[in-house]
Image (cartoon, rainbow, N blue to C red):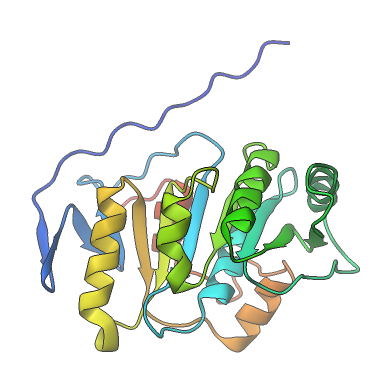
Length: 242
């Protein structure tokens, strides 16, 4: 049986920079999404997307956003991987998809000292907030074999992750931000990520308690108050027309 051809994402067109506080960012912005194509169309990139999720400054709710993103990127055939750097070890849920269980088994075989957990449609993995933990996260992303991998880090670990050899190499980043309190800091963070070639989206408001709770169990449906479609379209490479 022949293997399906791999699709390669086209390069985004160059656009005029826009001002964002004291920093100039490349690309336009629409509903919190930066670096969007000029024609408003998202092209799906190759499989194996890695998304970095972090808060900027004192904004809360980044872990819930990471869990919601993982749910949005999971399906019947492929479970998303949620790596929580420095987070608590999660327990498996009583009900989990077959794909989440398969990923859990592969991770346990490759990283026997860690405790992956199938939760709903997502597989969770916690790693230490240090260089060895970041390297383990990179290994876990490789084990995920082409599915979505969401890596949640505390604000102070974002730069170490980006600079550590063997750590996951993100394709996109979701930042939980409070523009009213941290506008200049957000501008710096977004500008740095764009310079590294990442697609960037910002979440201006924390998800509701129920949505975060359900996302943590890997059971957040598309109609359950999760992330806006505009952010998902950019981060996950879903086609969207504006």
